[in-house]
Length: 594
Ligand code: ADP
Image 1 (tube, rainbow, N blue to C red):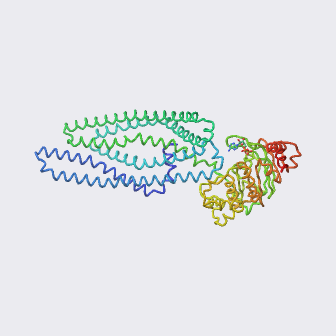
Image 2 (cartoon, protein in one colour):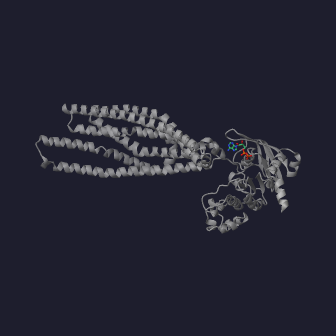
Image 3 (tube, protein in one colour):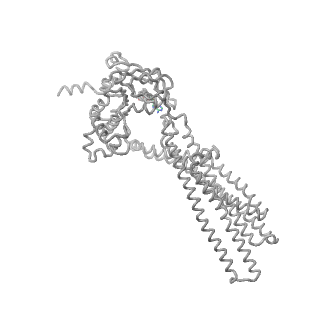
């Protein structure tokens, strides 16, 4: 992306503030004019004092001059204060408003993206956040720079140059001839830094995601006593980052020195030339001060040039990643326009195959048929593709080939929000948001009344337990036990009231007592709905109307428990292994003794 591309992309974000920008530009022009007052006043002062000295006048005759100068400088400073305030404030106002709009646009945009987007390596949570934050930060800095630095300073420089040229062509030429050298050095500096800056970006991201991973896996690290090993890994990241940071500083200091040197050469040349012109009687002595101060107005912005370059490079580096996020059109979830009045829950998959964006082939030629109101179990070893199958039915991902029909209508024809409104999921671990129990249950239906929330909790067999808590429905939901959190997820579904429910190992993370307790909640939510359940719990499997057995992304058997058991295939293998793991003989003997 070039800097022009960036400005073009920023246009829609900046456009609403056109009048503000115009005002800021006007202030800039005024600022550029007032910045030249000092050199002019100083030349006038020096020349007037010189002529007073020539005439043999003393302090007594200078009152008028001194009060004139004081008044002018005072008035200029007062005006300048307002101008600088206006420039800064309005520049900042534009920056803050554009910044919040950029962030919000990114948030709104990624919310429209499907799960493929989130499962990409570059979009893992830490990385995505860094990309958005850095993008917004560098773009807004660019805008801020433009209004607070680039515009006022270059306006100053241009006006000062014009005055220098009109005073004397040679003096103007010297000031002007320094500029390209300066630009060239700054350009070289920026070029030198560019590679390092990109590297710095990746290293910063690695370091912050490394720290997040570290915190997430602290339990394992501690239990294996791998603190030193992990510490060393972090240290290596730190060392790499440090080396890049030092290289950046070294380059900057070196080039800053060169630029300072060039600037001083300019000052010396101007002093020599003006002194010659004064001695040659072509100019008054005031011209020396006049030219030096004007040259200062030319070189001041150039002194900032490397920083502006630097920040422009930042914008160039980070904005690409940011706009890539906004432009990922392929990631937008697309649905059809079909709005069902109510989904019955007949599900059919015809020859469906699916590959994850990272290339994992997860499903091969799956065909299943589920009638409305049935409870169907998906059985298979871990990694067989059971959760993937559900992901496809919820349309988190579109299949590579084959067809998925819901109530005899292709799934991709459904309006997505309407479709998902009628599907419900209970996962192994359900996300409980920070907040009260009532808020968490209400996530199932945002406008539910308090009574509806209580009724849902009651249906999920959670109400009595909530009433025993000191804060009852206002208690912190994240403090609840695993079983209670699962029941919150079920209560949410009672409020949502979908026709089809997917249960992905809903009891896998619960202990036996909690599993038994939650059984009535699950039985209640299953009533009158199509249910697809992934489970390793024999009781839940045996209870189902039909069982699909999956192996390495394929359906290998299907039928009722009895039919499958008779088949003497994969199902029987899994069933027997599960039964053996329960140590049924011993259990039976223990129960017999009672
Ligand atoms: P199951 O639910 O039967 O345990 P999954 O459907 O979770 O199996 O996984 C099936 C295959 O797809 C596995 O090989 C798994 O590694 C892979 N897989 C699951 N989720 C993703 C994902 N988001 N991206 C890439 N591969 C995935």
